[in-house]
Length: 121
Image 1 (cartoon, rainbow, N blue to C red):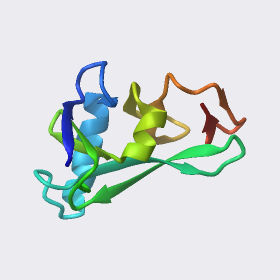
Image 2: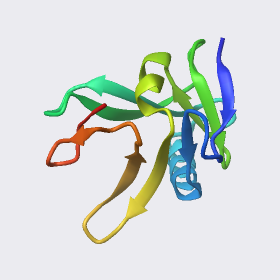
Image 3: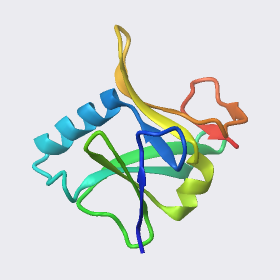
């Protein structure tokens, strides 16, 4: 059974900034996905020199046991295994001269690798 939480607050699984939501919604729309059902999946996977790394992809719908974070019109799906590593994190979108992309600020991180692509809790 899925659980839905408000992702605009600073409590819960993940909070989502307005910039991140706008960017993801634009990308979902560009893929032709129904934003009332589809969403952005945020997950943690084994890998990288520090042990864990973030992954993101679009999904047509949540899985049965996902937590669904709703913020600024965006639905973010988080599976139970990933939730333990990213609880309290913030998903943001940053753009600058060097690069643009989604960024996860995770208060549970104890160490990151030098390139910033992986972490350890």
